[in-house]
Structure formats: structure tokens, C-alpha cells
Image 1: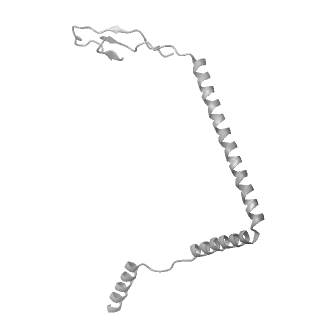
Image 2 (image 1 turned 90 degrees about the vertical axis):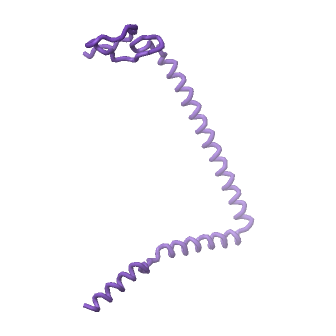
Image 3 (image 1 turned 45 degrees about the vertical axis):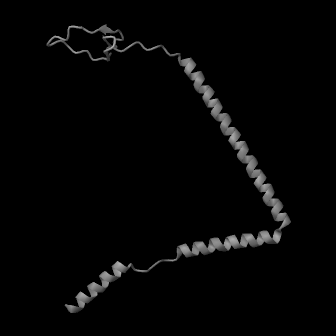
Amino acid sequence: MPRRKSTETTTLDSRGAKIGEPVPKAVIDTNTASVGVPRQPDHDLGEELSVLRKQIGALQQQVLDAARSAKGSAGKAMRQTEAAVKLYPASTLLLVAVIAGALAFAGRRAALPRHRPQPALRELRDLYDSIRGRV
């Protein structure tokens, strides 16, 4: 079993260290001339856990409030969309067709291969062809 660390503090020798004297491995406080780890106040783990539980409860409440707000906003947007479709069916159909056409055009344009050689590459090919023709 490993040795326990000592938590008691000892005072420094004000006359200075002697040759061959072991150097303490601890915190040296020059203000109080003490060596060692100062005593830490005992923390109550139950108290810390209760604080963490309160924080988790507050976070859960915030998430629930945000979810309710998002659900309400989505429902409101859905009702407004339904009302617009009922009032303007032809305009809605035209708008959907325009959006679908724009998406199809953009998708087709992005899918087209681009086989244009770079100008620098074209110049290198021309140079290679001219050198090859001379040989």
C-alpha cells in the first residue's frame, strides 16, 4: 500500500539549509515560512450533489420550454400555410412549380461535367507538342 501524504506543515529553518539536507517536496510558502500542503476545508459531497441536481433541473426546464416554444411556432407556421393554400390555391401551385423548377435547374447545372482544360495546362500541352514535333 502506498504511503499517505502528510498534510501537516513544518516551519522553514530561518538560518538556511545545510549541505546534504533533504529538500522537502511540498509547497513552500515564503510569507509564513511553512512547508507542506495547507489544510483544505472539508467539502460536503451531498451539498455539491444537491447543487448539481438543481442545475440539471434548471437545464431540463429550459430545454422543455424551448421545445414547447418551437412546437408552438411550428404549429403556427403550419396553420398560416394551410390558410394561404386555401385562400390562394392557384398562386400556391404556381409558386411550388417555380421552386421545383429552380431546384431541378440548379441540380442539373451542378451535375454537368466541366471539361475545360486550364490555360496553364493548355500551354504546357502546346509546348510539349511543339518540342515533340521538332524531334
